Length: 501
Image 1: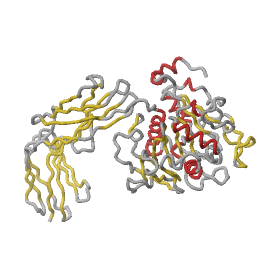
Image 2: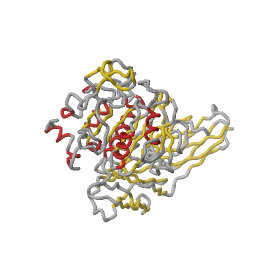
Image 3: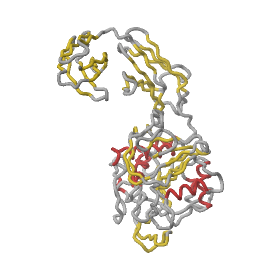
Image 4: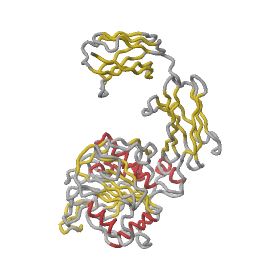
């Protein structure tokens, strides 16, 4: 394929620095267009039939070929997903926008690794994406897949719910993926997980606290939610592969080895990602004969696009770069308003990017207060920053490293507590009708807030700058214990309790 100069300049520069363009292969060999599915990035022909299980000519299902059309060299940052016609076209277009070249493995091609006579041999690709396979892998194909990953390839494994056999050959995607991992003649359970024979539909915000995770906090953004529409779950087996890690669980599940929605692991020099539902991959367009839905952009508030692309970028990223890690991070209180921060990381010239100094008053909600180029100091020296606006309360600090690849690494969190000089008095306590508050003058406009024991905010009232007292009518409050807060600007400077009798 002839690549335009614009394409090289706009998309290829970062990969040109790596010496070659990363190629991503989407599978269409395992009946991914059978039934009410269209898991391909593009198709111009609609002539496949799956009446006998395996694809044959003579039907109306999509027949994706190797090269998507129109040419990907004309794709720009503003190209819409309907530039190609397939339910995975958005995923494919996003890959091209990240500088990758994408192809399809057609139904009548060969799935091999290490075969120089096969122009689409897996050795020519960095990532192989298989979205809901519906035909078992042969023994030779299983060997090819495991060798591909072991030697540095990235395998994206998308499954679907149990009893989702679209071509009616007796096997659905959980069966097929589990068969690969348990019946391959090389190693049982090489990736350390299995797909459950389950069928779940739910939106889940149950994301473990992994601030430096490449999938949850990658170049496409932070992932906070997933939504399954008849998908399955994953059970992890860390005893068989200690690198296996979960990034999302079903609602209410503990962060253990069960009820996982998405996980990833390393095997040899390569990587795998496991995803329990095909619906989030669907961009809602493609074969007009299928019922497709926009799960890629619309569902889960856009989080599906973020996670699928963060995971693809992680699979496509070479292991040759040593990721940033923090060797040390220290904070020291200097005086009433000043905190000195120092840190050191194992950066190299190829991984260096920026360091963001982030601050919080509650240890949860962090804001960037400064950004330092990683090359500003010698890598052998400590980086340093001085915060001149520490408050008379808790000050939480962390450092966020953003590498040249876009990958983020988070330091530990350090708390520096300044003595709170101001005072507050509440009377009478207990009180029945009126509550009097006296406190030191505010430096900014603030608020008084009241919360019940269940954490519900029942009352908020503005306080003007220099306020020192407030009288509150609590006659309508139910007899109980309440928590009161005084905020100076956005900073909580007083927290106390009172009883309504």
